[in-house]
Image (tube, rainbow, N blue to C red; front, side, top):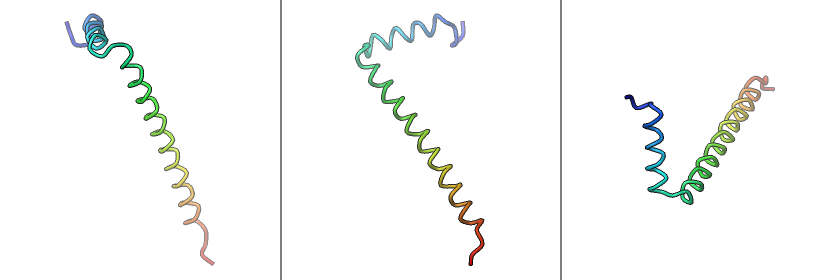
Length: 62
């Protein structure tokens, strides 16, 4: 019986639900989702700034 068995995860899920309750888990998951979304936006912003820097450095100084 390994740590990845289905019964192990069912028991862990039940314990978490008993400890935190359904009302406290939903906001936590929402906050995690917002954090992931803002991280993705931040990474996209880094790509745009790299492109801008590369474009500016490729131009010949006149």
